[in-house]
Length: 233
Image (cartoon, rainbow, N blue to C red; front, side, top):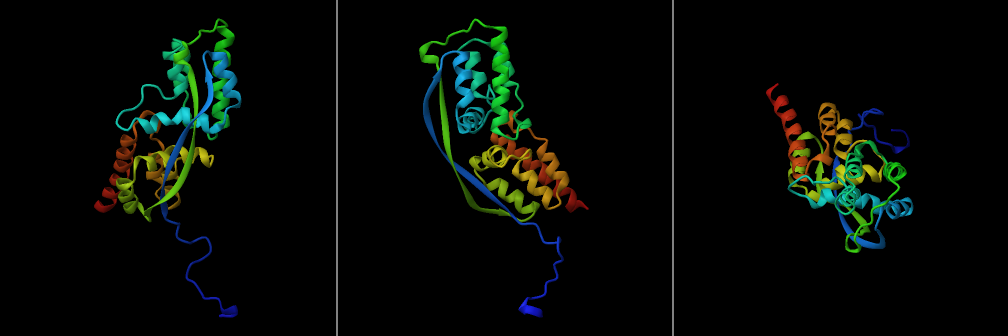
């Protein structure tokens, strides 16, 4: 063998896809010291607040509600509805389909556009009571690999049953914005290993309308049904 290199039966482009390592995250939530009492103040702060704060206020609610889908899909919608009694605006903010966005920047611009349009048509701003001000938080996240790895669809099912809700949150929500992807981590990997139908079906799930345990169970149902069909021939 020339140059001492070993021969291999693998042809270029035919290497076996890498396994899927499940990750999890830990987060440290901090108050920023910034607060808003009306829409103008909310708008002004949202223009320059860190992306981690916007991610926190549009996603933390899904990590907190383990057993029931949240009433409001983001903190901004909840605040303008409950503290300012701006019902229509709250519905608009709650109706943002976060799956359409691949970056916090684009999500920020969408929220700002909704607030700006509302203030143009409703210049008389309502003021929240001091105790009901919107307090901006942010989260410092630490991402860590777990010991759980999937090599195929069967071991993916085993992993999905074993991982924590923090891991589900990371792969369905955090990683998508972290890497600017339109799809969740699971669907992306499943397509790479040839499980196209399963990947597409999981992609059709809307985790923003489900609690994390529902996300797990529906993902498992899709994968297990594919395995059962395969076993039945």
